Each structure stands twice: as structure tokens, then as C-alpha cells.
Length: 272
Figure 1 (cartoon, helix red, strand yellow):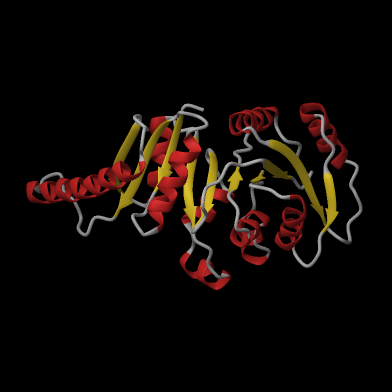
Figure 2 (spheres, one colour):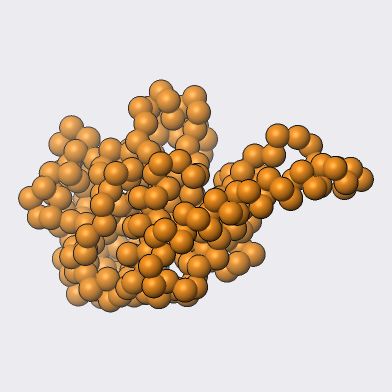
């Protein structure tokens, strides 16, 4: 992986996220881009020179803030690109990722109650549920420490792609971590015949058996019980597409898990 993007909102948690990003990148030495998406308080017209000058001044102000923040935390990192742009936050991040060929997005995650998420939405949750690239969400207040165990959580309904397997292995090698696989099954559903395809793929790719456990109360609580017992530093999810009615009535496992666990969550892009 050659290029990482850290998306910051310049709140108090931005310093925490940068501290994590720079420590994390010591395992990769990727080119780090630090992006802030700001809102312009007026409509910019190409014919209005005054508006264009105002826009440039605002952009420079945010860029200077980013540079100051980066210089405090970057230590011996040299390949750092601070960028301030305007636009809709989610789309601006996606557009920047595509233009700059970013391979990993690192973004902060502030846990909110379900009603707050329903009314205000969450850019982080949206990017986790529909990742355009591998997206690593770091909970507010998380303090970086060397990782030892990566848990890959799969529902077995769709086999992990070869590309996902390769990226997961590469991540584990750089971080010097052990990969373990977890499947939380519904208490009332039997194992399905097609689950065997996913199980065999994991056995072939990783030479591992899957820890299978029945859900207790909720999937996040069940995963947390495994983490408490076995340890774990990163949870990897492989989200599948959901219709808007699914999300409204049922929610998604990615949202529930990432909102309730206090360890970093990596949502892997699963498109073939």
C-alpha cells in the first residue's frame, strides 16, 4: 500500500487521529495525505473576482491550520500532503480518493446514539457501510498501541474474494499480526450448505478454522465477549450491499458493530 488518506474535521479529535495515523504508518511508510473538507459560506461565481479571492483566502486559512497540525505530529514523516478543499464531505472524500489513487482511508468515529445517527447521519458510518476503498475507522479517544490479533468477522454468506484475502494478508504482514476468523451465527438458523464454500475458501487461503459462536443478545455484544476472552486489536468487516428499506427497518451489522465496539474497525471493499 503506497498512499493513505487521513480525513480530519479539525475538532479536538483530529490530533488523536493524526497521532494514530503517523504511528500506524510506521509499519508501511506510505505517502500520507491529510484532508479537511470545509464549507464555503457563500456561492462562488467564476465571474465574481471578489468571491474567488475570498475563497482562496478561506482555503489558505484551512491549509495553514492543517500544516500546523501536521507539523506538531509528523515527527520523522516526510511524505505528508495536507489538503483543504470544499464541497459535500462524503463526495469530496470519495472524489479525492479516486483522483489521488488512495489505497486506505483512515477516519475518526464518534459513537452516537441511534436516534442521533438517524436524524443527522454519519459520514463515517456511510463510508464503512459502502466502502469505495478499505476504510479504517478509529474510535474517539483510542490510543495507539502495537497490534497483535486481527479478527476478520464474516457471515459466510459470500466467500471472501481472493483480492480481499491478499490485502488482509499484506496488512497482517506489515503489522506483524495474527489473523483469526469469527462467525457469529443466528441462534435460530442452522448452518447453510453454501456456508461451506466460504469456510473452504478461508481454509485454503489462510489454513485456519473459523471460530463459530451463537449470538447472545446482539452481534456486537457477542463479538465483544470474544474480544474480552481472546484479545483483539482490529476488527475487519466485509460489508454487503443493502437496500434503503433494509437499512431503515433492520439497520446493518456494519453499523451496529462499528458503533458499539471501542476498537478500530476496518471495512474492506469487497467488489470483485
